[in-house]
Image (tube, rainbow, N blue to C red; front, side, top):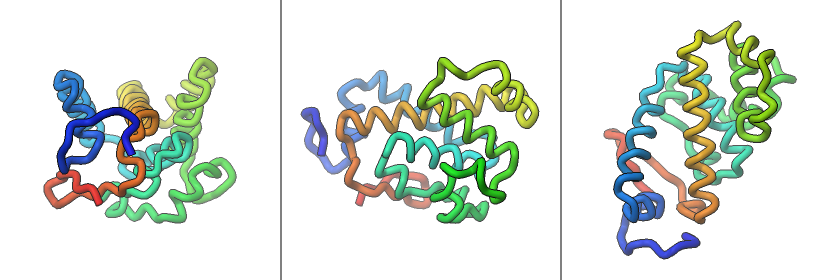
Length: 168
């Protein structure tokens, strides 16, 4: 349940909250679209997204799966164990460093050092590192935005074939 007063309507709470500031709604929409169109591998994208959902304790993100990741064969078991990626053989070296980077970004970004960036650089080019960083930032920020304001935390979001959000 929202912790702020929202306009009445049938749209998800997050959409109604953003409607209070249309300029931000447009920016959020553009950012969300850019992340949705990310060129990162969808398996990697989903693993990073899930690790951030675990850190944020975002009920929406924890229960939702991107259709692209499901198509790429990302299993619920793989997602459930993403916090243990360093211990398990189910993750590639690139996935492990991306997940570690996401963890550090979300919990202790001031301690991201040159060694971590060098380890990222062994698997990703500079543009991919920029993209990964912005994808992480989006999921962290939007998850916390929704959590802090109590938006849609008890619903499960589903998307229709056109990518339109349907709240249930």
